[in-house]
Length: 319
Image 1 (cartoon, rainbow, N blue to C red):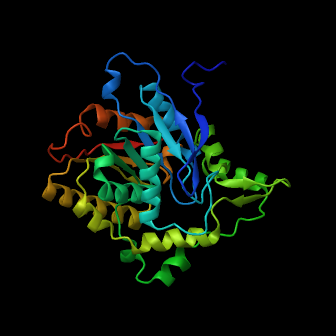
Image 2 (image 1 turned 90 degrees about the vertical axis):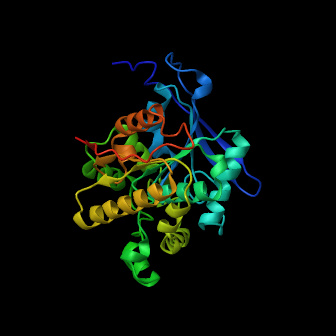
Image 3 (image 1 turned 180 degrees about the vertical axis):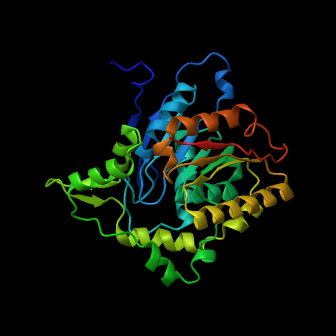
């Protein structure tokens, strides 16, 4: 069956020079809507997680476009089709990349959404440059201090070092995704395969090399997320995921409570929308996630500098 015009929306794929490096971005144009003035609709900037890529946002970006919202998804340095310098994987440099990207593209105070490590990046950016962003969306990240779980860096790396995937057959990797994520839409599977370079012999290699992965993970281990929440003055939508892992979900619930306490103390508007599903909920449930974000925006979460801190008890259940 032929898709609708909305289904056929595709992004413009381009590279943006930022001085020393260039980043690959996917620009999604808003489709016409008639219930709100165009000037009242801020753009979105979508930031992927560790060892991921911009394509994981395809489904949600399409949902945003159908809701009349333009967005830009970016491959961060070292990832996807962006440049891969040997240095610059600390939070200050990554945030500087995003600041330059926002200014270069002329994005007027976008709502910036990040997933996992990307959520920590977005939180860091909002604290460093609050004047640049209208609000942030933290998708299953930006809630916990890694040092609470891993008392030393050596233990952290031992537990979280990525598996060796270089040289695996593409067929085996694709089969893994289809077997373990059978409820994902096709574009979520395709986006996940975008995490890898496909070699001429049909084997794969992660775009993010092991040494750069290690540098990012060490920066995460050193980040004090609780301090960032204390300094945040930008409205935030927190979207944690209950994936059924008791200890990890409990840590996220504690992180949510800590973030809300800091927000109440400063008067920073914050809302929480729990989902149930996979860590990559933006790939698994893109339409539902996009709708939740649009609902929060329409209700005014990102539209005022001062409003009461609010918590939603709603849990969205996948499946």
